[in-house]
Amino acid sequence: MRTLTFPSRAGVALTAGALFAVACIGSSSSHQPIAQQELASRLGRADAPLILDVRSVEEYRLGHISSAINIPYQQIGARLNELAASRDRDIVVYCESGPRTETVEARLRQAGFERVYHLDGDMAGWRRSRLPTEAP
Image (cartoon, rainbow, N blue to C red; front, side, top):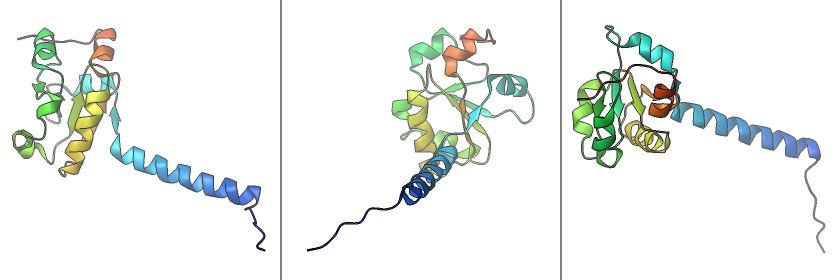
């Protein structure tokens, strides 16, 4: 008959800590936030990022961040070629509240874009902060 042995509490804690560290490292590389005020201060400057609004065309028409281009999140895979010239540029992605942005961030990183940032608060937060928007 075999006797089961269990790791010590210290061993369990060490393993859990290592797994947590790996999870944090992975998430920091897949989600890089940019503060609203930082983006607002870069608008119109030479180092302005490409701003990618991934909401629907209707949402975009109701108001968007100045100079943002609109590629609805469902179309990102088919329209990656439109972003190819910006591969080495900062790209700030936003939707209304976050979920669509996360999908697009992952797709862009998978396609080799490395300088992808998620706008803190997305469009809802931008409006709450009373930052400027424009509509066509």
